[in-house]
Image 1 (cartoon, helix red, strand yellow):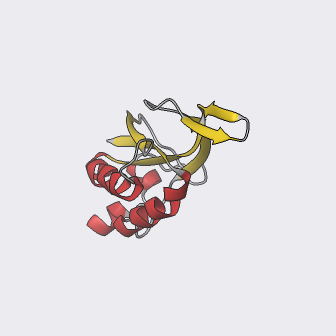
Image 2: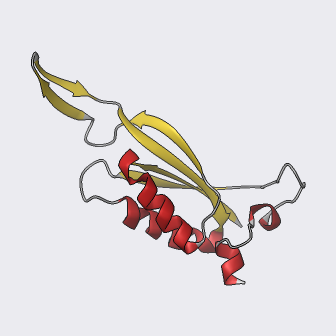
Image 3: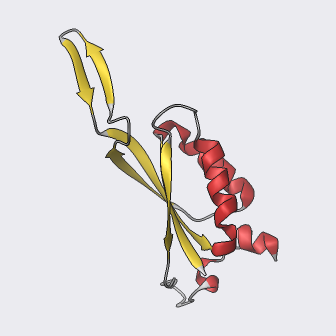
Length: 124
């Protein structure tokens, strides 16, 4: 039915990811500023007074809700656009979504998710 993609990416890759998603027809998304670290545990910086560890790095979290059949294409698009090949490129989570309701119209399910010109509209 419906899935939520939550992608944590580098800040500098946001425009690349947004442009790539727009190309495949992903129109709606939310972006949040977040901080965290993964396997690398942060970064070590050297300054005048020595070295120090920054363990909570700035990242962006993209949230996208879409139909099941669009998930793989969207994941691959995000992965390609967000990749630098270095540690800290990010991670993608997939969650099930039980229901979607558009507040303004009361539309539910697929109708609440569909926008003119979006990925589902293009496939119709």
